[in-house]
Length: 555
Image (cartoon, rainbow, N blue to C red; front, side, top):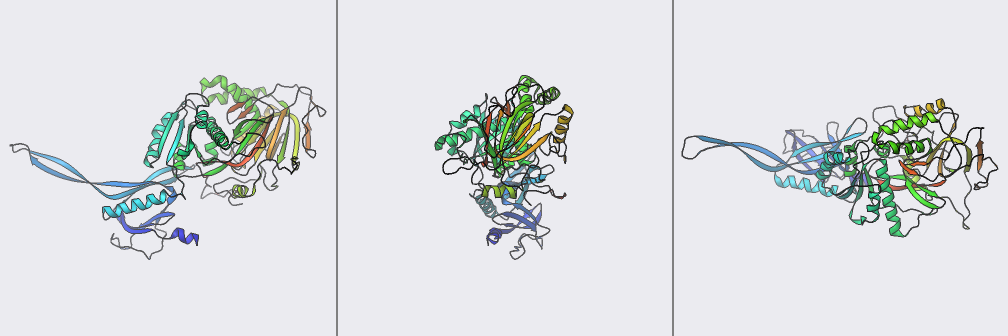
């Protein structure tokens, strides 16, 4: 019955498109048109099937805008100039608002979206206005939940410092076309956006937009969640339960890596991201909370890494003058140094035994795994009994010397890693993929890094790597000379322990790379919150016409 209601014809007339008479039909979900059987605009085929092989159809949610198209007709008039016999001829243009145009999304290779314009000529002005009003009423309905006013933050320093130009030339014209109003703020220093959001009345905006990279997105994320929790009087502790904000976040990529936008749309194209915002796309993504000794530190949405990636970030801060290339240079230096760090990681594995970081699934748009996780995961923090005792089921502990401890709540795709550093990670399953890289030779670690950059390569199929899908974890560095009898915080009684010690030289502590920002505390607790924040995206659309990869949407 619901499908019949969606396909019910709202408006149907015969209009002219590119000089040809066509029957145009509007339903609650689609706008379609097909050539008239007689070629006459006076024909109205109300009894014909809605969709045919020679018809074209556009989803209503993918219509960017509709407005009057001024149909221009030219007429030449000649008049005498004064009393002389000389004639002056002028071309007169009259405007006839008897046509309207729609701008809609059209797809291009590599997940890119573009704007396509189609002009419909009507018999008269009244009919033209009727079509415009009817389509606009549907576009403005609460079901589509499109943004009308946005608060935009532009980072002029991120990436190649092209943020202002990208917004001005590629994004602002599209927002204006769609009738979206904006307040634009050019950020002047670190945490400018975060501080502004924290003190702003967000009831008057429909979305927060960052023009920048992953660090800029992290600012908006933390500002929005802190604002929401302050309004509700929720304390930010390891046992607190964050509330999903009513405001969505959008990303216009203008950074060095653009991991978040790559992992949620499949491309770092600014126009594509702007169209996802305009059409009101929405998807919930997992967020991790990072704590140090019960004190809240930050929220995180992509990579949280200790060891190699933390060292690279520290070193890159001294080479900002190099731009994005500093990550390549610093990554090479840290790879050559081949440092390791001693520590202990305790984690609680996912209760879903069928889901793991090497299960071969992909998180496509409409992912079934993420949909079921949202419905089933009512508790995203450790389970508790009535007397407050911590649930000990599923806990494990690993001690050793590590090149890196990496946590991902999305695949972390980027230009250098087209499949992502954790390809099977899901956007909204309430879990993180925890990668433990034990100390190894430089050559072996190079094999792992190389596989992260190659499609269809399993970067986890190496003897020195352990990978788990977890609901939470803790990490603490071990002091020099630590062994199994060292004083440690006791893990749950039934936690499985693995130790891997070899008589090697102890290194100093590393730091955590949290979405491109430094967390100086080495010992942390990490909680994963299922689909805590909604962003303007719909997930990566599964490629058509190719051999299907096993995915969560078809699992």
